[in-house]
Length: 236
Length: 236
Image 1 (tube, each protein chain N blue to C red):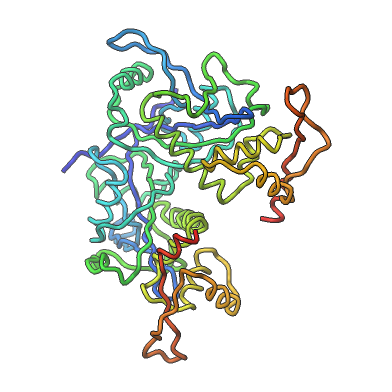
Image 2 (tube, rainbow over the protein chains, first blue to last red; image 1 turned 30 degrees about the vertical axis):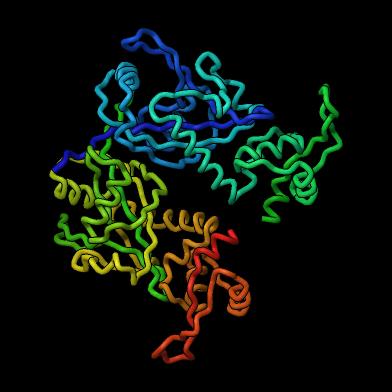
């Protein structure tokens, strides 16, 4: 009989933020050394869990320790368990050095979060340790973290399909029609016709046009809108 | 610093089947002994994973070993990690006897599956070991398996919201309008008006009325319908 898996378990957090034109993900800088010398690369905020915490607690703790962010709602979306997760020697060496323990195999439970990039929680962001990187420019990350981001996007798409209000968690409090269109295009992965989108927008009772317009922009100043959560819940 | 969790990991499978009027779940009989003597109760089909398999592989293996079912599509939906999962002494004693190993803490990754109760895969069901039980009559199960079934139902609801064709995986190939209505009521947790439902049904291009009617029933024989997956994918 094969030996039972006595695995280490980790949590990883995919924190998405929209900067007004592109979707970004929060990554932790990693400095290590392998047979070719020193290297710098990136990984998702994540770590092994302790014996006295459940997964949700661990995800909150790890995110806060690595990035400084607290009080962020995290959604568990998938467990990753491929035997090849730790096939890159660099990752194993780095991890065993960080943990001071022999690591055999790790199953990770992944979470996603949506943040407004101007949210108060982000004021304490540990910018020496983390950085926002556009999702399509993350390059090769540690472990299977590229796959985890890909699956997180799919999970976000499924969630947003059921609950559009998620999208507004990514937008600033006041947003333009173009920004709302872009976030729809990014999350659902398809281009939208600008004119049709504007028409549709004017029919949404929960997207409220404000008197205020953009300031200090080179192009024609666009009108701002805000999301009315109450109105959204009424029509849902 | 708290010790790292070096957990055992298990998989549990929630297999749903609809018997024509109620939603059932497939449970494994458990015989054990505690300080009060011998007992018989029930649990979900599940077990610890081996070092040389990933979670999907483990779920397929465990389901097949315990129930005889093979080739069933299983959907991973959630990891359960409460520290109280193994707070019932009976469960710990049973598990350590079954595994021959000291068990500290177990995180389980849960899967659900939808089966037609007349499906060919079920012909090899190990009826000495397992039984179908109506979801609202399962009583108190081992570990946190009541919670897992509850969460599986929520996951099914979310999935079916996005993809109605899931519901037809539960129905027999030929089904009545009443059965389709019941499965909708069960999955979405609300009563539907019979007359409105019939009206709506006649407008669905992917639910095809057959010439055939029920045989040997006490009440008026109802017409049979079938699900047309091609037509469904066209209108989706």
